[in-house]
Image: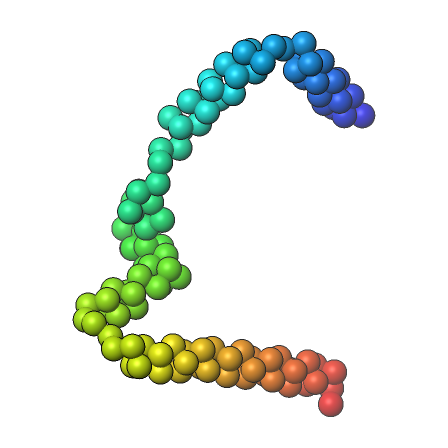
Length: 122
């Protein structure tokens, strides 16, 4: 109860001070916050999503990096961009990939249905 009152009081104070601030003051505050954020979070680069901090356990870090690369399909993209792929071949490959994804999804649904029926005791 006390914490809730303190939070609501601080929100009221924030709203009041915001109303009292001039446009220039708000601009200065927002600019300061943006500058602090930019120092804390540097801009993204080519390795941003593929960086893993290595501490003591090198194997664990390698495993994390491997899972990130698999999730982002970096290896598949690299393999596909090594050589030129003809338009028709690409179209057939994409159709096949879509079909495989749909088929796997349907099989997954059927297996879940069977497991649900088994759990009911049928």
